[in-house]
Length: 547
Image (cartoon, rainbow, N blue to C red):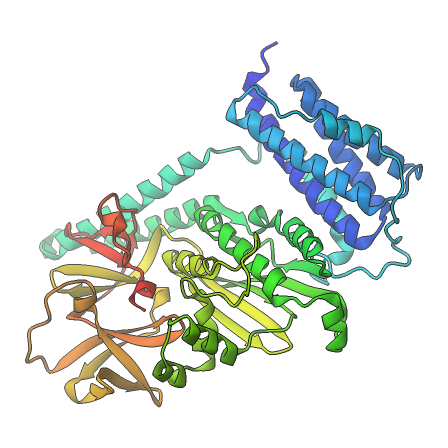
């Protein structure tokens, strides 16, 4: 019987089993020998073994069977759960994940898992057991306090949900089809703007009412297409508990990890782009931010630190906050380090606010690590984080208190394909600022613009804001002199408010952003392009490169 037609379904469900297995095993390690979790782990291993055997993937079935046998001995109290068993099960889960990836790629050459299978089947107890639930003092779990008691019920529900593959209430749709639907919706919005521009030249055509109806339908279509592309944050967060756990053990630190709001949804494209930046932040939090147990005790803290990711929805934005209760960052030390590396000079250091000093960690090449390790120290991680966030039209800010910990706040749009933008004329170009990247727009008179230390500035909310010429930054001719006022777009660059002077502000417009091909894609200030209703091309700017 030809089973190849079921390969995609097998791969999808296998990945679901493995993700759930990893999540449960990390929970088990922090909670102790919880029987309900052990039972759930056994069911996942058993299900994966059965599916692999049906699909005739013998090596996968053999490894899953060995894990199932070991869990069966723990389940029947023949073996006591130990750290050694946990490590062995996680190693088996990693190996299964690699094998499923090989199957997904269509490659028939499986990695050799004979040694691992032998160690699983021949395992004998000999390590210190984990505490039982009755005596353990577990760190916070990955769920909020309100939902923690129902964690097993939720996991069981999720398990039941992905087994119901024959349900007619939902269907599997390839991601490229969803991407195509977004493209079509964006093109329809562009066409609608073209019709609106044409209608202004033909008032007798009486197109206002049908155009209004078309706009309403397009908004509804856009919302539905975006909803179809939305995925919960948990889609990328499955590996985070394991990452923190493994790195903490490697560095000799005790850390509990939790995620609040992981069911909040974002566009699939944003989730894909933000996954690695969050890994950078988590690795830095474990390596740089968290104290060793003995250091925490000396400081009067619990030996076990905490790292928490909190996700909240705010209208058309999502806030992702990664916070730790470690030793925090010292702004004075960051400034001193930046001066040593020649990143800033003494005058710049004197004028820096605390927020600006904290944002120095995002400067290319900046690091406070004394030595380079395989975890951090090269000064590239946080720079990559800031670039990724800004490329998505979001913002990054940092808060920290010495001795209390640090928080990294990522403010991201729900979607990046169709955005609200402020259009601006700049020389021969029309450029677009994502609305969420703008603090405000100003119309400055000539007397509002002053000079301080050779730098043009203006006053805003009792402080001086540096002004830069957007025309000069983009290599465009300067605006003609004699104008009574100068438009300025105020945005935050590296945490510092900056006013970008330009020719003319055209207004706000919903635009469909497309990626640019070479050579335009090499321009650091431009993240994409769009076509207006009259056929003009606009470029979407990344203001972070103007620092």
